[in-house]
Image (cartoon, rainbow, N blue to C red; front, top):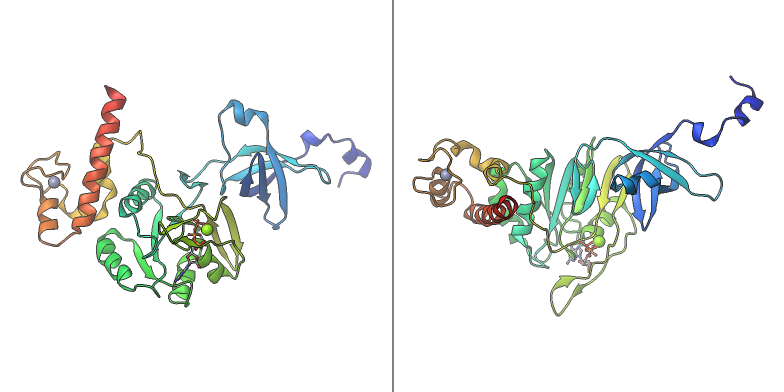
Length: 309
Ligand SMILES: Nc1nc2c(ncn2[C@@H]2O[C@H](COP(=O)(O)OP(=O)(O)OP(=O)(O)O)[C@@H](O)[C@H]2O)c(=O)[nH]1
Ligand SMILES: [Mg+2]
Ligand SMILES: [Zn+2]
């Protein structure tokens, strides 16, 4: 042990940095939690702006804590396992897509999120909430996503259906992230799952849409579960660095047919002799998924063309 006098001579910047997880960011203030569950308020060092680096909820960071009431400094972001821009989160390993009969789900938006999650090796879970209103949506989703490896859980935050099952699916060594349209019931579901008090909002009667109640991402750690509540959104921009030929690789249900189309470079976009198209016509794979794949493919090609023309 060093003696007390020697310790006092150590300058703050020479102190070893602490390590923690970013659990919230509001304005230019970030909250980081260390392994002992202590929370620290931090601001970014100037180099973050210079290097165009934005800390994200879920980031593992190095920081120097502030003294007393003073905020500390976020010094470094450790390498990320995964990164999403919408919702803006890092290191998520299991994306939990929440949909409900109301507001009516936008399945193209859902498939966009799945495509991005799969491209990063994330695991995807679909929770069909509000089963108390209509139980048929979950059955439909099960059929549509059967061959994707995505587990579909029918649930109701209101009457408790499926809550235990969702809880089981979140447990383990995963960093989970709830995402989905505003009003689908993400915060209500998390309240039911983990006995929390997150703010929830009504669905607008007139337009059957959520009211964007959750404004900021929050990483919750409770009962061995690590999960983020995020703000709902209704729009996801096209990816601008995706090669059109790569999109099909994000569809696990196409895999058994790859290489079996008439043309070797077949993109499964109505080319003659397409094995994927035939499988859909025979009811072996979901036509809805294939149609939406084609919509995303058209968009991907458009973006790619604009980029290279
Ligand atoms: N009937 C029914 N209503 C539910 C259920 N779960 C949530 N709701 C209602 O749906 C509305 C929206 O719930 P929120 O939890 O705020 O939705 P959210 O997905 O967090 O929305 P944002 O934070 O805006 O993204 C509220 O009025 C909830 O009471 C459910 O299982 N059944
Ligand atoms: Mg919410
Ligand atoms: Zn094909």
